[in-house]
Image (spheres, rainbow, N blue to C red):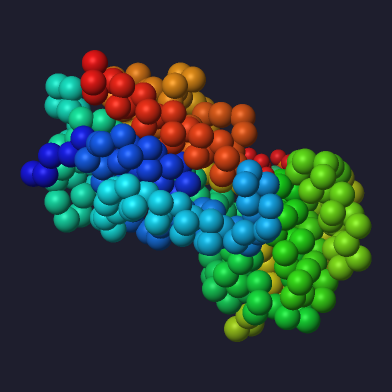
Length: 304
Ligand code: NAP
C-alpha cells in the first residue's frame, strides 16, 4: 500500500489542473489515467476559446502543455486503471489494476465519453467509416462526403474542421434548430461545404467493407431516405464516467456528480471536477478552474 496526499482520478484538463495546483502546493500527488492523458479534449481538433492562447491550439497540444506543467511541479502520472475507491475513516483507499494506494484526498476527474447513436450498423462500421473523432480520422476523408450527427457545439465545430478535407459535410440533426451557440452556428451556415439535414434521425448505417449510406427518417413527414456518404462522425453528446462512484456520491438523473460550489462532494476530502460534475458549462476553461479550486481547498482541508 502506497500512502499519498492527493489522488486525482483522470488526466484531462480538470485533473491536470488539480495536479498542478496540488503538487505546487506541496501535496504528494498522483494522477491515475487508464486511457490516454488528455481525455476528451484530445479528440478536439481546434480550441480557439481557451484564454491566453489566441492562436488555435489542437486539444492534444494544449493538454500536453498542461501535463508538462503538472509534472514540473512534481505530480506523478500513472497509467493505471482505478478499479475501486473505498472510504476508511478520513482516508480513501484506491485499488488500481496494479497497486493499492491510501490517499488523504481524492479529486475525481474522470470526465465523460461520447454517447453512441445506438442504431444498426454503428458498432459494425466503427473504424470502417463510423468515427467519434474528427481530429483522428478527418484526414482519411479528403475529397469525400461525410455526415456529422448532432446539433451541439461539438457536432458543428467538428463539422467545420471536416470541411478542410471533405468535399461535402452533411449535418444531420433531429430538430429544426441547432443546439450549438450562435457564433458557432453562424460559421456553419456560412460554409458552402456544409449542408444541414434538419428534423432528421439516422435509422441505420449501411455499407459493404466501408460505410456507403446512412438511412435517415424525417421526424415530421416520416419520410425515409438514404444519403450516400463515405464517413459518419457521431457527436450526440456525452455520458458521464461515474460508474466508480455511483454508490459513494450523489449523482444527478443523468449520472453527473453533484458537488457544492467548492467542488466538494458529500464525502469530506472527496472532490469532483470537470465534465463529470453537474454544471452548466462544460469547457476546458471551466474544467481547469474546477481543478484549481478543488486542489486549493483540498490543501486547506488537509491543513485544518
Ligand atoms: P450536447 O451539447 O449535449 O449536444 C448533443 C447534440 O446531440 C444535441 O444537438 C442533441 O440534440 C443531439 N442528440 C443527442 N442524442 C441524440 C440521439 N440519440 N440522436 C440524435 N441526436 C442526438 O453535446 P456536445 O455537443 O458533445 O457538447 C458537450 C458539452 O461540451 C456541451 O456543454 C458543450 O457546450 C461543450 N462544448 C463546448 C465547445 C466550445 O465551447 N467550443 C465545443 C464542444 C463542446 P438536441 O439538441 O435535440 O438535444
